[in-house]
Length: 512
Image (cartoon, helix red, strand yellow):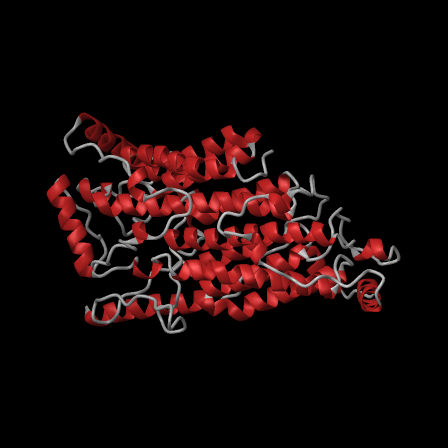
């Protein structure tokens, strides 16, 4: 039996090694378009984290009549008129919506690192170490809370940096290369934007800095993609090298502030210890009469029991949005929910199975936050948003998702409620059972938060977003891993959490 156990551990570990060595493959599916609006007043919008955008400085550009700038134009003209097939492919890859493209890359990284560490030979679990990311288990374990935090830091940094970039663009008002020299060949739609600093360089550099901090083992890949992104702007005839350099310099200053925030947001303490987890469980047992236990053998510690103490973005505190307790065992509501879940797992339909599997979002996926990032990216492309407004959409949605994760995990470990698979003897779930308490449903909380923000930004899509959130919530009941009360309360709480992000958005100057 011991030999078989060691073989299983080795197999899981090798699977993780394979996953962490596989390529991140993001296909070009975002066509270039002319922006619906350039938001010329974007430099006056309020940032979500920076206390002052005037603290971010870049050098004044050379005059368009200077010899130095004319030399840059000549370089752009030469580069854009002699394109290789690889350069054309890079222009196409990056030329649609760079925020959406980098979001795809972030999703792929989250999926790549979303694998629970295998148990050690002695039956214990060794956890990833950010100070030694290359030793198994590799850092990070990009579970749903970690993913929500990662997307929030990346997208909020992009938004704040682009507000600064827009302010500088219209202060310096340097025309694009193809306007300064109409003979320059262009490969992308000509946007009516000043070119200094380059918004694409800002996006690429923020992505380098934040994603490397969050996924350190991908540093080389991220750097290669960013270099290609920046260079593609010259190949396409969109920017000069000084435009690119200014964008890089601006972004690095913003990145440093967001990385400092991430280092001090209490994420490092979220894993906790078995003693603290046992204390939380025993407190819940005394207060509420039941406690969740891991179904894995040996029992795996619950995922991130202190993630509820991570610093939020928009909500005032977890206590301000923490829902009340679930219905008591034996109550009419509880028993009705028990019967409902038994009916769904015992009598699944093709449609309920499809929904349960579509929203499973388990290991090796980008998690529920990543799922909603994909939905948001589709909308920003559909509505032809410029990079600044695209970043704003992602920032508010992802800050809401991060707050949803913080709130949900606080609730989970405050009540420590058993899942149906523990509470109902003999229940067979249709999908894998997550290794943390049930109440409230993460899918429901994440989905309601994201749907509410997206519905605010895209009013014509609001009812559709709500319907998607409800389907994501129901999927957990269909799969047998959440009670109706887990999901119903998660949806309500997610909307409350989103209201704080929406309240900030309504006052940032972008909706005037």
